[in-house]
Image: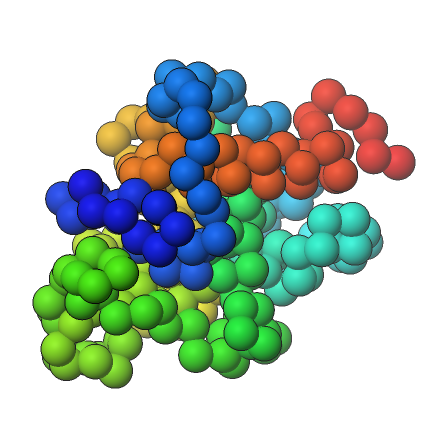
Length: 254
């Protein structure tokens, strides 16, 4: 393992998204998070309603409950366009892998830690879900970050010497080549598009038959994305906060 800025740990051997923008997470003492954390509650009593019309054709449909979307965005601080993508991504991933049980709040929590939902550095998402800001992480040149030589001739990150994590969910080019999905049905898998990036992240987290409704399954999934115990704890805290603010499946949000 190699240390990132402020002690974040990333494994060179994990085929995962590099968390270039979550450098503020610091190393915490205590038990290994892989065996210490319960799965966060799955958010949203309206989740099944929101899933209506979102099919395995991997195309983001208009939100069937715009009022919930606006209310949940206000409650959580998640931009409405990003929230729509997270809900669609979780629904589609669960359709493809029914045993996964991933909640949109988990996908959203990863999006928050990775890039503040595509707003890092003053960026934003347009109506098509495209990131306006330069969501390209630091050079993975082995200095403060893991050393990963260029793998895509700079096609995604603009650097033909070293790779960088890119997009709102911070995928490195090699991982995107394997995990990239077309989430908006335009025929292109684009890591800078929130629909594509969110679906790719959700699908990646659900891989290998994981059951994210269990403590071990959820923690293993997040650990596969970033092999850092503080990262796991921050994602869990954020996913739990989103569930509390919008209501869990057993609660009425009014």
